[in-house]
Image (cartoon, rainbow, N blue to C red; front, side, top):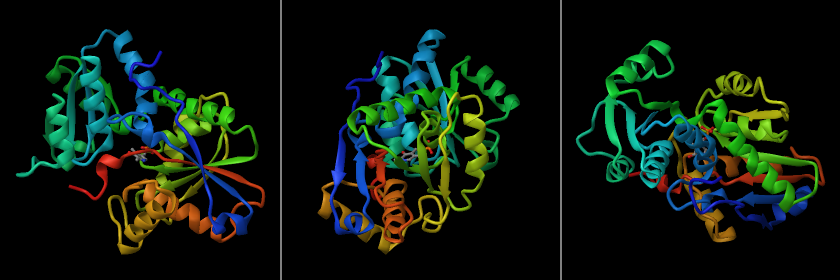
Length: 297
Ligand SMILES: *Cc1c(COP(=O)(O)O)cnc(C)c1O
């Protein structure tokens, strides 16, 4: 049952370029950016079974965590509104004089925003802190940052099932941008071989988090975690990345953004050019959406 409509499958689009011809690989884009106008990309996939659980638990309020530009807060605010759930966003950092367009959108969707200091935000996974939030906000259903829980995995795994129907060839490598690693874990749980591109500096910690998430899944594909394409860190970018995004749009007609998908495609193209993938490989790059964050407010 899909609570959030429209529902997938999303298109699988092949890109043509000399770069791929020379390397003798095929590159496809899984267009999850088209999955829903507001609950975009991987957030739709990750929230699918989490939201079913919220309803099964008969909770009317959902609380979650994110920064001022969080695609997850944005998606959850929209999904909550659509499903008639109250939403509370615990936002990292003191309330700014001018709220970001992301937070303004969240408010428009009825999300209640609760700003906390960066120190307090660090407690977001501690049991003691969560039970304090529960008492304070009347026992909401609590979703971790990024919507990343083991319940997020089966929704992402469905993406792989769709691709297996759309493109019945192998071997396939999946390319995906990683923030918390939840989407990567979901792809792995479907048995996919994944090249994950950390959007953060020092992304090596993701490996342990992803292993933790996939510990109890029946299948696990192989993980190639790339930590060198972060462009200085989370939300950092330079002219070269912005040029790449403009050029990508011109050549392929697909919009990327500078936080996640721009870095992922930049890294993927670089690796293809360097002959990282065996000849004859098929690569499926997941467009995880997030276009609300394009050239930040
Ligand atoms: C949130 C987000 C990611 C990161 O997903 P994780 O599951 O946290 O790794 C990647 N791309 C986009 C566009 C996102 O909004």
